[in-house]
Amino acid sequence: MTTNSNGSSEREGASVVLNLDDPADRALVSGTLKFAPGLMPGEENEGLVSGRAVKSPPRLADFDDSSWETPKNIRDVVGAGFTFAWYRFTITLPARVKGLEVAGAQVWFSMCADDYGEVWVDCPPFGPDFSAARAIAQNKLSPTVGYNAENRILISPRAEVGYRHVMACLAINAPIAQPLGGVFLRYARLEISQGMARIPI
Image 1 (cartoon, rainbow, N blue to C red):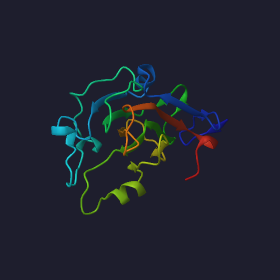
Image 2: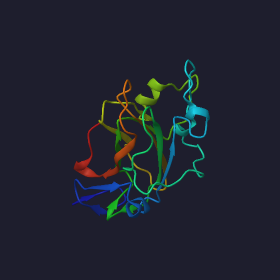
Image 3: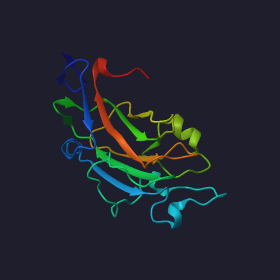
Image 4: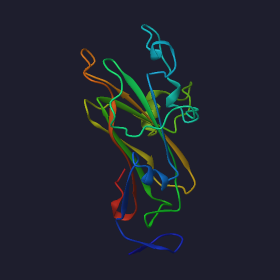
């Protein structure tokens, strides 16, 4: 057993992994899941305009997704061909999850998109002092890592109880030159770790 800074004990090396596609697991972190198709949902041609720079608002932490639907299953295939979709997960960290104390824990989010994906975490608007490169360095963006590859990103190195986090996931169908089927997420997981279960960073 180990004792943390406020005097309570916890199992050394303990982790809790939540399935954010499961309403029961989402409820443990006051979580919501929202979905909408398209690079820019609601825009003409879903925001796909050749030759223009595109800023897709759903990546932003303060984006209003209240009108989006809650999917029954993130593994349901959506669209066909050159297709995009957004999945937004919002959580609020509680004091404990399944017996594990959350304060000071390391929190990771992981997902696997079919076929390529990006994860934007608590993302502010880009500006002179905030770019994609800086977003990656600050764990605000986990960019496309490969075909059907896992995107894993550190949400918090030391969790704060009551803190709200937004993970905005963009799924992109592929191969780009001949996209097959549609888009979906294979899984979306939240990992909360204390003690020896924490990953050195």
